[in-house]
Amino acid sequence: MTEKYKFDKNDPFYLCAPMCGLIHYRHAAIIAGLGEIGTLGLAVASFYNLHLTKELTDLWTLLAAIGLLVIAFVTTSFMFYGLKAEKPNYLRPQLYFLSFEIALMIAMSVLSIASMSLGIEMTSRIFSPFVSVKDMEFHFGPIWPFCIAIVAFTCAALGIWFHLTVDGAREFLLDKKYFDHQSNDNVPLESKEKIEEEAQRSSSRA
Image (cartoon, rainbow, N blue to C red; front, side, top):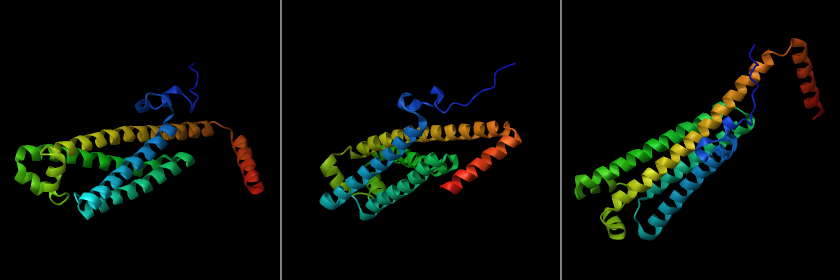
C-alpha cells in the first residue's frame, strides 16, 4: 500500500521558478507586488517630469498613470491580505490587473512599431493625444516610437514575470487549503470537537 502524501509548505516544489528557485512563492509574490508598485511609481515620476519641465506629455496621460498606480496599490493590498490570511481568491484581482497591464504594454509596443512603418502623419495621429510629437522628435530623434516600443516590451516582460510569480503563490495557497481540508476530513469526530473547544478557549482567553 502506498504511503499517503503529506503536504509540506516548505517543499522545494514551492520555490519560485521565475526567481530561480531562490525563495518561496509567498515571499516572491510580495517582491512582485512591490516591484509592480515601484515600476508604476517610476512611470508616474517620469511622466510628471516630462509634463512639468518639457511639456512632452499631456495632463491626462499623467493622470492615467496615477490611476494605474492607485489600482496597483489596491490590488497589491488585497494580495498581501490574501497571503497573510491564506485566502487564494484575494490574489485574483492582482492577477487580473497584471493581465490588463501586459495586454496594454504589448498593444502599445505593437502600435509604436507599426506607426514607424506607416509614416510620420500616421504617427502624429496615433500619438498626438498622448504626447507632443514635435517635441518628442526634437528630444529623442526620429526613432522615438521605437524607444517607446522597447520600454513597453520591457514592461510587458516584467508583467509576465510578476504574473507567473503571483499565480504560483496562489497555486501554493490552493494546494495548502486542499491538503488541510483532506487532513481535517481524516481526523476523528471526537478529536475535531476537542480541537474546536481548545480554539474557543484560546480565543476567549485572548
